[in-house]
Length: 438
Image 1 (cartoon, rainbow, N blue to C red):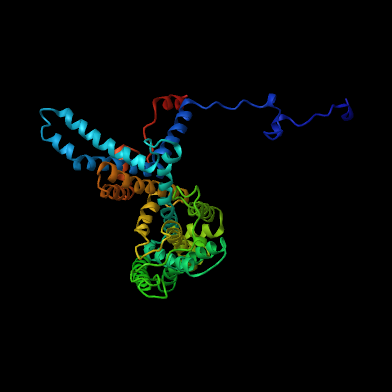
Image 2: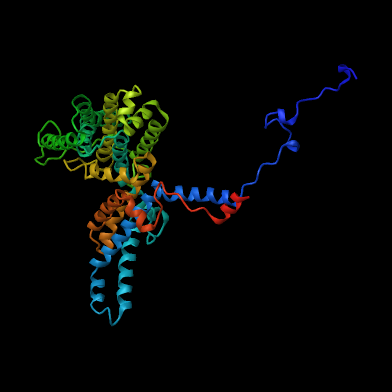
């Protein structure tokens, strides 16, 4: 038979790419053994058990348990029942349950939903209060978390909030601008003031090597006494005709509008904070500048070798960090305290933001939900105090314990018997030995 009579044949299945072989001619894929399936499942479970998110949740659980113990120890009924514990032990258990359940029930009703209200509109009001308290905490927490990702410790939130609140407040009560434009100008003034106050820290860190912790602490005092002096000086921040160190009320055109009407305190600042969270997430995870931030935070020497200007990164990071913390001051003066502000406008938020950033593991959305949690603790803490007579200091203890447990992951792992991050099983299962021998 000649070559012209040989029928043309296509390439064999072995010569084709795997995706070009017809399904009927493909070799069957090897089935995974039970050992492989078990190992994959164990790997996923191990990653969950050793993840930062789970440790944060368990740290909150431990703090709430410790808070429950403190509530029981300080309750008068529990103390009275403890006096005759051996004769009627159930009375003590009942008193402990009543004290703890009553306190945490009041916490829930003051922070999430009040079931005692007649309708949904009034019952959901505690949740809006939680979000109102959370708004400045989230903004300041984002600023602190951003500095953490660059390897800097920004504890100058108080000073940055004060100067930002002063700048936004001055524009808010001093100028007459159209509605909408007035609010935007006031917000921008606060952001710029906070950024400048934080940028001073970054500039000193980059040019002189000054430690940011010392500089931010000093700038806190400078900002506090500067704003206090301005609030006592007529023509600057002090209200005309007043001897009190307090500013005039903000004009209506410079105030964040309410989101759900005058019956709720939640204002547009919460939406601005959501936008800030999205921006920080995009900055850190999708932008070139964010990559440089993370590289410097991981290893500044390696980043310098790779061609990154570490000094400039320090300045940029503190500018953005100060601006975000300044947003917290803006939300305070234009959304919460619109009748005028004093030198206590920061309300300790600058330091609470450190806790929020730690609980959120310096991740934007982690900080967002951590801020909501701390907002719930603040809103519910007042309900606990009013309804159950629980000291508000218990909530402060719970917040402090959260920081303690976040800073001690081995302790949390030991309590809940979680594996360490690098732990692996060293013993080979019997089924694996049988399969290996075959």
